Length: 256
Picture 1 (cartoon, helix red, strand yellow):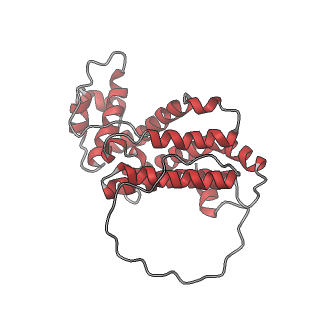
Picture 2: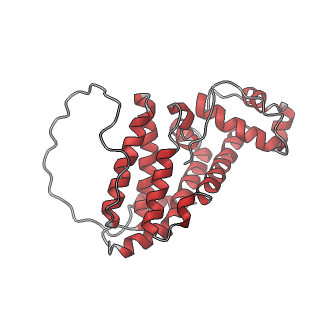
């Protein structure tokens, strides 16, 4: 999902032309929930940041949960616009377009981890068990991002004659890697942790698609953290790769 700037301080949005109260509330909600979390973001706080009355809020949304569901769709649509307008879409090679998507995700890592956190990932980690409607809305938004990449991934896999996986499985892996990278950036308090993880993702995709393009900047990550030694993993016999995506992916798509 997209990474857009957010501030921990309330913003005055009333001067924005043509936004409408509903959009103002949606924008405020994404900023507040990304920064403070779902439970800590009250309707009063969101209205104050949006510059609207509570009456205007309840004119558009039945309650905070309904707002969160709508905000997931709002975030999905903003992301779709940003990536649909990106320059990599003009590239002729489908594999190059996928790599260009990852390059843009790395380029968007500017500021602090809180500035580029994913609204969807932040919210669902908190409420996936307590608010099923929000979890389902987040799943739809993430699957929409994955679905948008599938045609290019499928074409790249065909060109590379790869049959051990599917476009659906690869597209979901890309979204999972992005979410994990953003969590690592928060844990390490350093965006380079996310950038390094996404460069590894890019390297994997190059190998999968049979490409030999350079993988961003040379060298390892900037962040240096002491870590406990990792015990050696037990050797397991390799299982045969499957040509089908996992059942969880199929089930998630069927529930939409």
